[in-house]
Image (cartoon, rainbow over all chains, first blue to last red):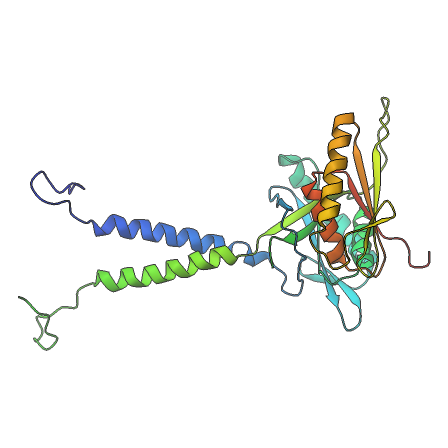
Length: 152
Length: 150
């Protein structure tokens, strides 16, 4: 097997194969970190910026409510699991179902409570986000987290 | 010195060229390295909805603060306007909250902050305030919006 030193007599040889291995590993690393977060984003929601917010705890069982904002009509649209809920009572029912199914996972996981993550558009009104919180409260979820992004 | 002659007949074989491959891999890697710096990471600002507290033992009265956000983006701490409505970083609010948190920790009393936002105030402004609270390490935060009829 060829060693890295190239023997006692000659110059150390440049090994191309390990260099390609390292390059490919670096390439895969950078590819994975650039694509991992992008997959989850709802493109119609522009998250507000909070550089000092906590890192997302992905180990917990959660329901993610997207609050889209239509600036022309000044109206919010609520989306849970890619389904639009025009009526808030329907969202409450869907959250209650999500809590029930999520709590079976929670019982197995390390974190004890089911939570609701609200991904509100930065231009949305406070009242629309508050309505989403009310739905979560009516569904029996008291643990709420607001999503934000680290920079513009 | 040997030269590669593409017209040398059937004996010539196109060998695997390592140098262009490394060039391409380097370019792709540089692209992803640059993109990695610009990637937007989703973060969270936790909050708890007010509920029924268990009162088994004697409870300490918390240091309660109320932060009000108006429709124009003006932020007030206990009815005192603080920072300008256009300031996103809210430096005065951050400094005041950090000082109050330290004072509460020294007195061993919990700090409770309620954010009261006007119904038509922008949610982005609420997140600015929540970010300031995250810097001050205040965890007991609740967010409320009064009814529009009030």
